Length: 253
Image 1: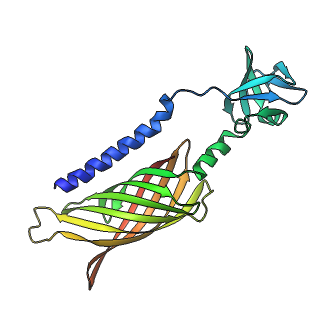
Image 2: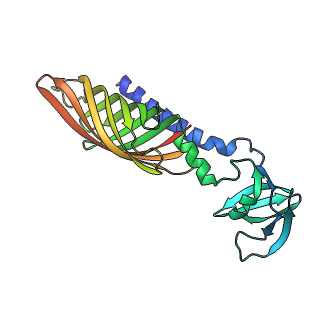
Image 3: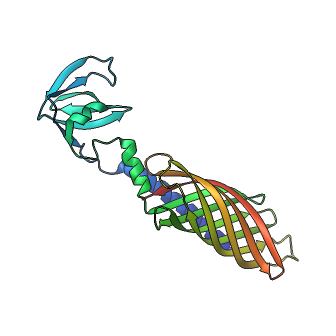
């Protein structure tokens, strides 16, 4: 019982840590806005994010503007004490911070593709019972990610804890929504509840294989859905199979 409670506490703490890390950017100190310089003859500042808004100010060659905010293909900029909106196409006539001249979505996708560490939490169905999983992964290359996971299954007649190490294979790592395949091995520990006095505790090796989809959402969020088939090696002549479906999210760094 103590081991099961420890596993549940670990999963709860992992979920709390993920939420804390996600919220951290909102409270972090703000960086100064990027600044670019006008290379063309001039750029026009509109009063709103669209061609239908009137031009009320121009910034001539050599002038510097700060990029404050982006809305679709328009940027709100500041030049001295004047703020207005510039079309993304006008950025071709500017120079400065290379990252500032790119779409924020492109920059975010670069962060996603170049991630190294993932922390995740998921819940779902394990052969008819609810399962909670906490996991941590490290990307070996564009196509491979190693993962350690702890799962807790709370059933009507027994409770199960799984400790497993997995290898994820991602054939399309740069896709916003991408499939993956997984193989893993670990320990399967099943503790019958008191109502089943004749059942024995199972503590055996288990292998798993599965498929899934990963979807990059925004900022550092990643949505992930899994299907896995676990095979528990009870003895030489008896293996037990379990199906798991889960949905969860991860944060990446």
